[in-house]
Length: 348
Image 1 (cartoon, rainbow, N blue to C red):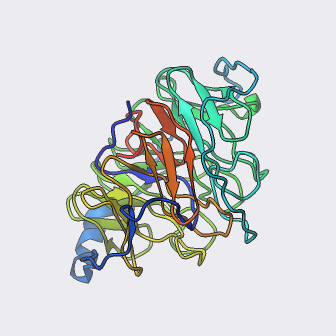
Image 2 (cartoon, rainbow, N blue to C red):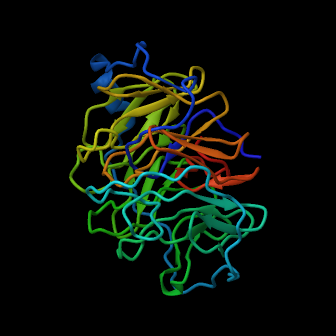
């Protein structure tokens, strides 16, 4: 069974319209986090070591692939309410397996190693201990099924054996993203032991402390993924080459995304204690229930991140102002969120 831990992070972006009872939807006035400008220079000095580290993970291509088993679709999860489709700008999304610009409802079933993507064929691509790292590694606009194998430090991309790459080692946290802005997903890791970021094709960068949570996203809207960390001890977000921002408190789950659709990633947290979403410069929104997993994404394709939760007790996804879908079994891993400490569970 998935443990919802203290701090989480996701993969996607989106906006939303919901069918959940009013017990779960209300906008509340609440005390929101604030920017602490007094700490900016001090924290930057403590965080950044400008000296580059020269050692890099070894890169080996064309390594053996995981066992892959092709089979007919399995009608395990089922649709409860049909969503309403909207036209709009194609969003930035890591979880779009059919390339339609909409975040897909998808889970990895750890018990059998199979990927269940709604309205698509089931496929096997997982071995015990692997970490799911879906992304658009070839730049064709479609999310590829992929895993990072900590035991060997190797990335395996389904149906693309020529892209399998050794990049990392045991203990590293995979953080794929488009760090050079060329339109495809880059192999990247955060190494907690030395707080270094290793991005393939780039020099290593030291950014953060060993206890920080990696939260890469496009915070300045320039089209590439920014290196960033969240510091538990003070609730600060440190984005490389930007000023620190204080936004969050103990036990919040980190859910950055482009909630207003303006092309930049917003600082955002989900607070399990009151089931409220706090998005910087926006009103707090209550959407969820104790035990829910936040699964934000662009579920209607309008280019903005939608507020959404997965209720594991019911197996249902509640997309705010849009629809409810049953698509989960106990122990499944929701693919629209990240494992930010490489322990096999969503978020931190």
